[in-house]
Length: 358
Picture 1 (cartoon, one colour):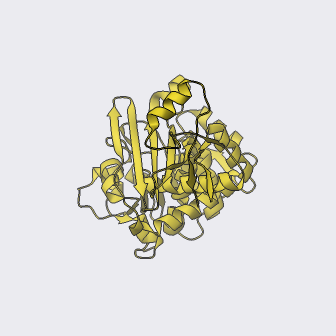
Picture 2: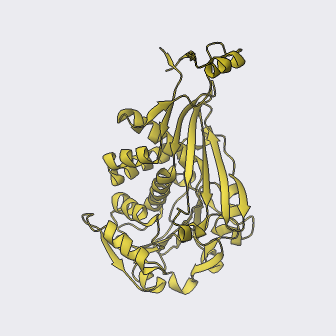
Picture 3: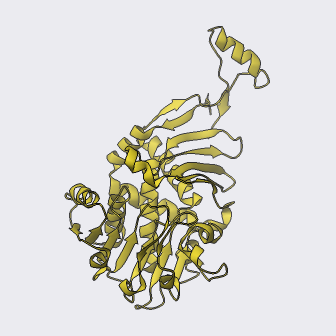
């Protein structure tokens, strides 16, 4: 059919209302399914490590990916000290476009969607790597990602107890308050990392400092535990003592990127790792033995943002979310951009070309 060429636009409030209307746990489950579908199409995608611009205070990144039909990219930052200025440490926006014409189908805030997809990917990996019957998780770092991690592991793995620790007790209190109404989920505040790990089947480390930190040491890690390491996500930023990595089964999203940014930047460049798509497709085991230590070394990969944008685009259509905007110039005569501009300057009616859409 023919319709005026318009781009769907979702601002931060649009996305929040959309997710709230669907329900956060339901949104995470839906998004996890989209991520799984796309990782199972791994070889269909043109992939690359993200382009990062580092500064002493943080990093700004561009994350592109395409399957030849749709193209997606995300702009995202990571500035750990932003919290001191009442700003998020992570802010993001992204675009989904059609490859055939290059037309931008959707422009959206991805700050909330990034939190959702990070949690969904964490739980998706853990479901394939954790011992059967895991019910208790230690959550180290109770900032902006904490609630989403808690809900994802509760929804997708049945985790019922979160042992929560943060150097800032107000962050833990915030987590307890926000999760108070979730049926079947208990948040237990503890006073140390070691106390959080006691009896935990799963450990999620979600700290933000841009430094080579050692949040976990080998003596804390018991046989059979699954480590979900997501705080170390750029060069020079880690959470695990390197000895923990030695002998553990390590799964990553995209090895060329994780070797630069993840916990495995502490290992030799040829250290063996398995990519998540191989585990999800059944080409490699997520766990070989009950007493094996497994690690999902997650730094965030563009394919997850493609999945998030694809999910947002479908959900926004289904729930009539957002608005349509003229993001790019579409003059009736594409060879007369100048004439189109002068009509706009004169205050006249500016024509917009009609295009075929599926």
